[in-house]
Every structure is written in C-alpha cells, then in structure tokens.
Image 1 (cartoon, rainbow, N blue to C red):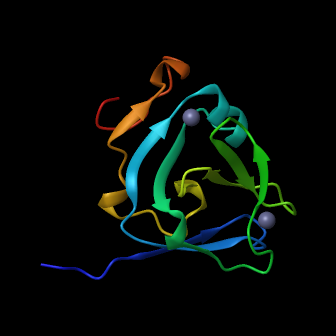
Image 2: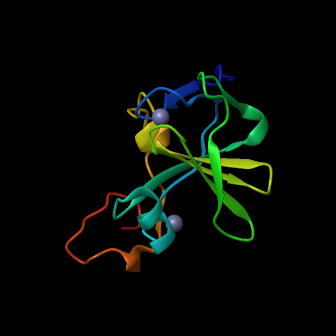
Length: 131
Ligand SMILES: [Zn+2]
Ligand SMILES: [Zn+2]
C-alpha cells in the first residue's frame, strides 16, 4: 500500500540555507573517510541521498555554496555560518548530512552500513548495521 512520501526539512546553523527534501530518503549510511571527517569536523558523517529534483533549497540564501571536492562531487555549505549541508554530485543526486535535519527520529534514516569504517579511531563506536 502506498504511503505519502515524507518531506524532510533541515538547514544550517544560522538559517540562511534551508532545504526540503521529498522522500524516500535513499542509501542511509555513515562514512568515516578522511574527506567526510575534514568536511564535517566529525569523526563520522551520517548521510542520506535524494534525487536532485527532490531537493528544494528553501532558505533566504537559496542554494548552498559549493566546493569541488572530487571528480564526481562538490561539498555544500552555508557561506554565512560555514555549516556543512552535504554534497551535490555531478550525478543527479544530492547527499544530505543527517545532522542538518530538523528531525532524525525516523527508522528509515538509520544507517544500513558504515563506509570507510577503518578511518575511525578504534575507540569511536558508530551504530550502523555493519559496524
Ligand atoms: Zn548558515
Ligand atoms: Zn566519506
């Protein structure tokens, strides 16, 4: 039976960049690669992915500022407060960081796997299905 897809809202620390992402949230996972660590300042980042067409930038600042991080993707951040929002890929997908979401309680957001888990210190515990 069809359920109405959820809309996930969130944004940066100062409120300049806001998003509304229309579900379903795809590929929930955590990542402890060095790029995610440097980008977020956290040892592990928690991600979900949406088709680009499902994400609207709804804050006064419009779309986030971008920094080209790899051959396939740019990291997205607020130019006012510096908060990271995620990554905008060259592919028609947007990765959003769960820490930027207003609400993260939904079980469908729980990470299914942990990529680059070897990048975290051994004392850092991460809840993901394969952690
Ligand atoms: Zn901001
Ligand atoms: Zn990563």
